[in-house]
Length: 303
Image (cartoon, rainbow, N blue to C red; front, side, top):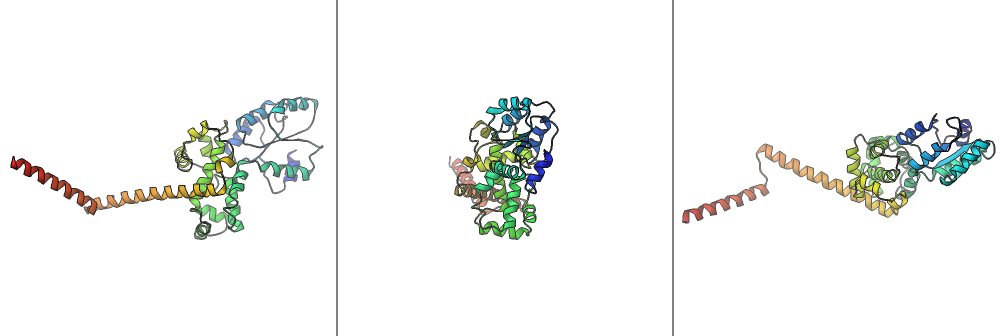
C-alpha cells in the first residue's frame, strides 16, 4: 500500500512509515505530519483502538483510512463509524492513483498549516513566488526556519531583500511575522489533548518552553495554559479575517519595539552611571532633594 501511495502522491507528499501505534503517536508529536493515512492492520490483527487513540489525541490531524477489506476489517470499520474520519479507501477497489492523489490533496486542505496559509494568502499576494513558497514551507515545517537569514536562503534572496519585501507589503519584519504565525499554529495544537505545552513548543522549534510562553502571551494575550482551558479550536476563528491578522502582527511589532526602547533606556542610564555622568533628569531630582534638605535645615535653625 505504501508503494501505491507514493505513486499516487508523486512529489506532492512524503511518507513516514511507522511499525506500531505508539510510534505513530510519537511521529505526530515530533514531526511535521499533515495527514495520517492509517490501516487497522498496522500491528497485524485488525483493531480499532489505535485509530481511535489517534483521533482522540489529535483531532486537528486529518485521517484517511486505507485498508484491504476483509470480514475482520469490516467489523473494525463499524466500530470506527463515530470517529469522524471522512475518507475510507479500499485497496484495489477505489484507490486508483488519480483518485488517491486527489484525496490526499483534499484532506491536506484541512491541515492546520494549510488553514494558516489560506488565511494569510492576501497578505502575501505581492510577494515573489520563491518568498511565498518559503513562508508556506515554514508553516508546514515550523521548526525548520528559526531566523530571517534561513527564510531568505529558502527564498533564494539576501536578508536585506527579504526585509524590503515585508516592508513593501506593510508587514512587520519577518521575525515578528513568523513568530505570530507560529503562535497561531500553536493555538490550534494546544486544543488537542495529545499535546503538552512542552510538546507544542518543541514541535514549533523552541529551545525553551519559557520563550514559547512569552511569545504566546505577547501575541494572544494569554498563556498556553489559559488557551488550553478555552474552546476556540478552529484555527480560522483564531486568525479572524486577514485584516485582523495584520493588526495582530502590528501589535506584536509595537510591543517588541516598546521592549527594545525600555532596554535602550536602561542601557543609557547604566552607561551614564559608569561614566559618572548623571542625566539632566537625575540632576533635577537631586537638586530638588537638595533644596528640600536646605529648607528643613533652615527650619531647624529657626527653631
